[in-house]
Image (cartoon, rainbow, N blue to C red; front, side, top):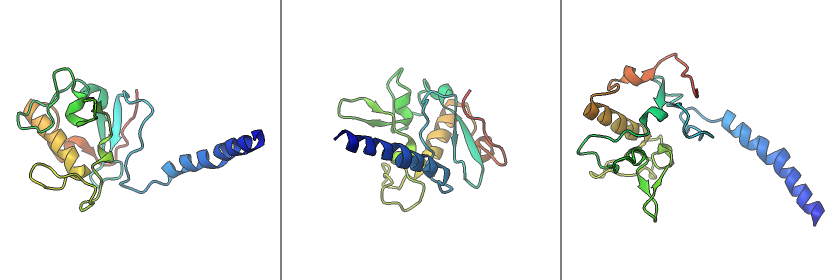
Length: 160
């Protein structure tokens, strides 16, 4: 029995772990960004392979922000700014901190994409644009143009 456990453990270490690490290396352009170990890092890079350029998103700077748009469908309670973007709620009423691309996929026409109140498909690009731009407009803070967020030829810095 111990021998079988040792073989399984060795298999996991030598085969599965390197395969998981290499899978990230060979991700296709436009694939979902891999989750980070530190959810509170300062900057998250979005749209690495988009034709308009990468977007540096200051996660820590947005943590306590609540979208002031009165028409915004994902209103967060005071002091719970996370719920404004991470808007899914579990059975206990707690905000689930999923990344956008868990539900909103990158390709238009993907049947997994959710629909909005008007039954329009909300793919990842639209979810980002609707969330970011509408909040920036309502608060009069932050960029509202393509080049305000997307930087062609610039590799954003990630982390501290």
